[in-house]
Image (cartoon, rainbow, N blue to C red; front, side, top):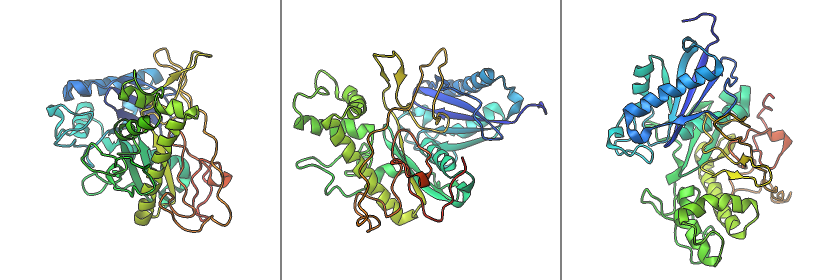
Length: 385
């Protein structure tokens, strides 16, 4: 071990097609200034995927000129379901469908392979912790928060006193399959959303890319005959285009996002009754980037707001396009003084606990009262810049 080398921690975010990697130093600064992806090879089975993780680490070290001896530990996240210790479900998962992944200890296997401590979280919990620490700063260990991560499915995390609430088996914060009231959310004649898990009327059936594809878009296309998102687009292609249509103010897309926002509001109302957190966060994922015909550049969200890629801006590299935050939507009208703090409604968490909304996971100063900023209790101190 080189005693002169600055200690670093490696962050690995494993997805179905790509692994994102970053390095962070003791001061909490990212040493990688871009989105660094390598093929994850999870579809080729555990041996190939572990080889890919080692290559991802080596690639990040090479980019930053960091010696391997400087690594003190590795943070690893993957999509669930998985135990708190990184043992994948015995029934597999969306990205780990091969039988060789069933019940596989991915954390332990990587730790044995590299000979370094490996800390595991599922990707939703990793995103929730990142949002919490960035938002509260030095007060993170004194605060609590709830995060919902909208992607192909819907994940999330509960943070209490700066620590992830994992639960006995790692299932803490799995908000996707929480049932929510559908009265007032569904339009007339709209079927109850069905989830891939077999439930009817849970959050993921509405607030996810799968919910758009399976439930929301097919219904709203029957109400907007001849819409551009109809044929010849397949339903899968059209679902990935809904966001870009919403940014242009398309009525069909806005109906879909209105229902998703209501679903998240009702989820947070339930969460408020259980955890009463200081703040709420919403993360967005799985959006397709779009090319600007004027500039030729790409913009959009990264494919997930996880810890290894949660950056405000990524600079261009030879292999990857430039990613920028999309423009914010118009702010909603503020509540009237007579209604502020008047109690909870089915679509709103409680007084003083408005969710943070916007692209990715945003860290905001509640005292500046931007429209996307989460409100916090009056007792909460302003986080440091």
